[in-house]
Length: 509
Image 1 (cartoon, rainbow, N blue to C red):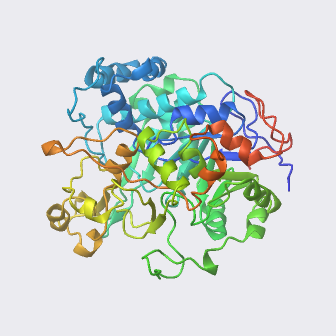
Image 2: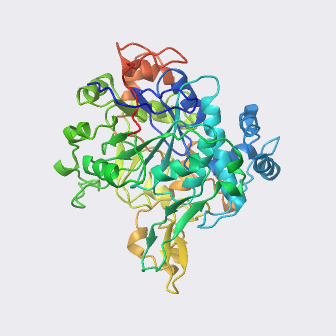
Image 3: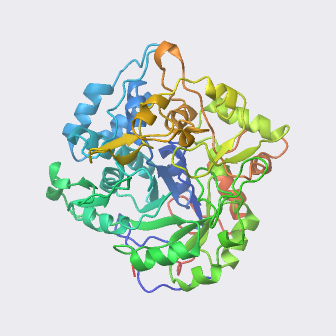
């Protein structure tokens, strides 16, 4: 089903943004790296980089010597050169770190960080998008988590400075983001209301970014990227269209079979015999309602097959978002040894994915891949000394004196309880921040020489790896994934969107 929409969403280069049939999932931390996104976009579909924790990724890559010089090449184009120079001065090690040396850490995120903190977040997101857009003229997107509020404005602005075309955000209700995009595109100040746990406050707490702090108003206005919230229900999509501040260009509708964080089941906390949340009829999406909303939508979660794409198109969707198949391709940011382990395990006895209701300190269910040597093993994880040195998933809470504090259910128990946290909230919680850095080969070396272990996440359909490899291969590329998904559909030529019908365009209304 194709609908001719009334107006076009201008892309970063001034041309219309045409709707892809395939959106490559924005998997963090840096699994959806610039290399993967660039390959997918150059091949005619929508490549998406992950902006989650990308400032830490930037400084760790610099400390590992910036192999290939890619970051330094991107940083040369950053419009605020003093920030790029300071980043190189503080973190770049031409010969890399000595073996066993810990990475230098960034200051923990706070409500009012320093200009350098905001600048590094902007620089990191700029660099990732810049590299993903190199060498082709097709759109590129960025994925951020609504739940990780503190860095989001700086992340958006940095990505927009690199002319990002799409912004995708899930793990929460991103009602204020469209207005922030409008303001930042004109280099005007933007604010997001902070979620504060406990206690009533006379004045709302906000995260703020003023581009004038860096000289942004001296630049030409930026193209406002298309905004695609990631939702789990038609009711949330309907509410966002009615109540969001600013226009929304479409939705990704994600089923609970998708990897990463899932929305909790509606109407109850029932668990199955393995402790997984049970989803029911109330969690099913009414595609009739989605069609009536009049904006494009893509289906995600269990849709990553030629049959899934055809079903999505038959329901009136513009296409599908696919994560798991891309996560284990050659271009993804997963550490090569982890890819090999998962592929071998999947081709052998198979790979189990557990929807863990307790693992994430956010309280959202989180998909965990069962893999020996990783933090999926409870006994192994419980041997880890609790530490919170990245802090992306900390919540803001009101202290007894009326001030603001930060805590995470995965931090050291004594610290969490001293901040008013409840012991029950700590049971089963895992440090996702450090584990996700380990997933991409950037594990921190903690005190005593302990090296952080990975914790992989994937969607339920791990058998897609077997289908992509066939009988004689041990790896596959991102373009192999696209060819597989499009099946016998027309292929897009590099540098074009030839696989997308001319009338499939994005509306700003």
